[in-house]
Image 1: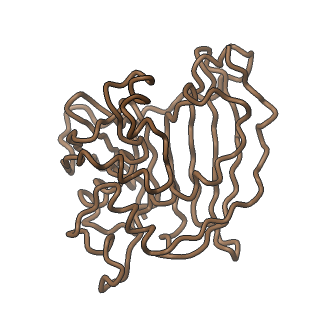
Image 2 (image 1 turned 135 degrees about the vertical axis):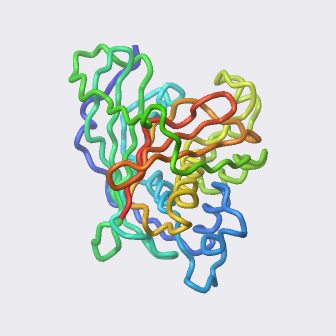
Image 3 (image 1 turned 90 degrees about the vertical axis):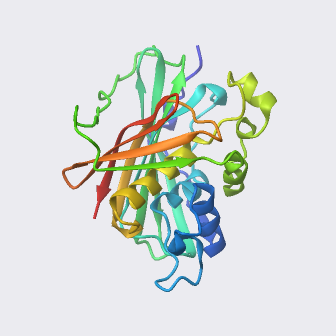
Length: 276
């Protein structure tokens, strides 16, 4: 059975600085499918200024991923992702981040790691909280707290969505997304992909996540990225470059319940977009 190091719970890493410029912001937008028609996301001299996709914060947050102990990384799966933005990110600047393993839960078939990474300005103003939920296959059964039950966020049965956005993911998209810093060969090397059980390289889960965020902004917010205050989602199936993604949203409370599907089924479930 894989080993779970409970001593990492509550430990915070030293502050990690991430400095970025407008080219990093534009690269990220392009890598999650933005087109030249999304002018404010891809042009540094846009009339109203360059806007930053809220999900851009996943790029710096990975640089501050905390120590999770000695894990077998192919078994350490990214199951859920959430972001909470306290204000829109500036198109350039420096972010100071701290990562922490908040808890590790015993789910029997595996262990669930609840991880939070906070990003602040150099003056200490809170910009975002990025939450990672990772499932460590085969690492359960250590007698730990089973933790809370996962919240189900399902669209209202029988109701048509309030918006639906369909896009085809270019076959080169995973190769482009890698330039943000996630260089896992699973997303470009056919040999690595087959070793992991896939017929060919798959899209980064966080790239699919970025497509979902853009779908909400374009479909439900008329392109106003500043209105999105948070987005939580569960990854349910992989996406292959070249496939078509459909992002649908249903109005609920102060946001949208969201579902993303490909021709082979649902790829993002239990998703909720919170609005300002």
